[in-house]
Amino acid sequence: MPYQKSNRLSGEKANKLGHIEVINSDLVKKIIDEFEKPLVESTQVASLNWVEIEKSDDVLETIFCVDGSLQIVTSSTLPKKELAFVKTALLTLDQKALSKVDPQYPHPFRMKKIMQDSALYHSTVFPLKKIYLPKMNSCDTVRKIIYESFLDISLDSEVMKTLKWLTYEKWTKDITKKSLAFECPHCNEIIDGLNYDVEVDDCPHCYQEVYITDMLGFHLDMQDDSVPVAVATSYMLIHETILLFTAIRYFWESRKYNTLSNSLFLKDGPLALHSQYSKLVPKIRNFISYAYQNGVTIHLAGQEKTGNFVDYLEILAIQSPAKLSYFIPNNEFIDKEIRERPNRNNPYGSRVNYGNKIFVCNDKYHHIVLSIPTGEYKDTNDISDLIGAKKIINTLNKLISYKYENALIPIQLANGIASLSTYPSAQVLKLFSSKVIA
Image (cartoon, rainbow, N blue to C red):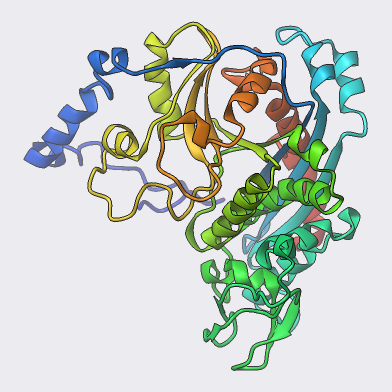
């Protein structure tokens, strides 16, 4: 790692000849040879079994779409201080109104009318470096921020209600359920879960205050003197998920089951929670399965824009059919062909995913990677196991945007609302934060 550039002196330059000895290694030569090989052989692409879907006008009436963004702001004074601004948004759209929008040349006035009073917003800020509150270290400060952010009064604390609804599986009406066990952020002892519906309690070991949001495990990624950006990123991803399920919970608790079954809940990104945050995944699976068994179909999907699956689909798309069709990779295909890890101890996604992958070809130019739940975990390549998949695909087929590559109008709009772009938003945030963190 070279010395970095400062306000006085230039940074250390890399040695231009340092690679010569490295490339003489036999192992490195083999890696370079693999770098030149195509990811997928053409014969393999041609052999994939794409399945056509009959187009239908029986589509979902309402779309709920969630997205989030994060912006890091660094102070101009020494020592350098950092803040992370996080914003999430839930957008509600009417499918009939969206279907009248020209996907290639959307009229701005029509879009304005559709977007009017259609979004909920949430925003918060995380101190990352060199920002301290009296009598609190960085870890406790961020823990408090996370708890109070879930209680966001601008959203009437609905996100906290949803977190508790999932945590205690309130749809079961079982008041004996406790939260999952978690490590105390103060003494590191294991707390055997919080009692039903509890938000704040004392640790039975050290008697210090803990929050229900501590159950998610944000403090496991933090230190006393600094907070990594990963904490803010994880918060954004979890808040997106809980915010989307807030709409689902509302219809469920209001017993508006027909409205719930006729709505599409769409997320920007895969249906997955990683690391310690994956403890919510079984709760989500349990609800989707419970609802489906009781005659209520939760049409939930996530679109992936980057990653291994998107890269792989770019190759598959070369010889994909120019009609509405799909291909579902099962675990064997994913491990062997996409991830190239055939000897896994645990099935792919069994711990972190609450949706299975499906490749969708809308036409010759539009191809998307979706995640759609199966309820309880299931390794499958049968579309009937993916809850509401055909109706989801037909609905999204009418919501294609040609403004960006493989774009969907709801996610495009949600991204525009939630975005904290590098410019000009970052400049506005920096002006604001300079008064706060100076």
